[in-house]
Image 1 (cartoon, helix red, strand yellow):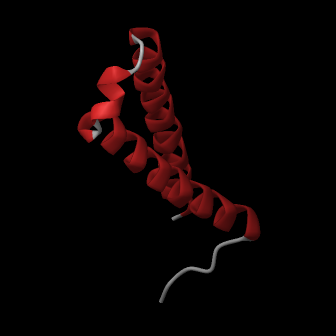
Image 2 (tube, rainbow, N blue to C red):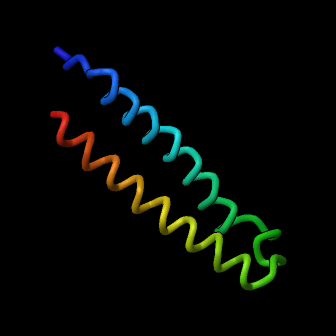
Length: 69
């Protein structure tokens, strides 16, 4: 039987799922899109940093979700 989440817990799950989708799209852009290599190096660095921060944020949300049980 699945546990019913409280409203604030459900919002965390939804936020995690949305972030996960965005993070995947960013990762594909960085790794596979030739336009990425045409960007100025500083912008490439910013996008790589953004991916790292988004990953850390996703990990925090995952930790919170694990705590929900």
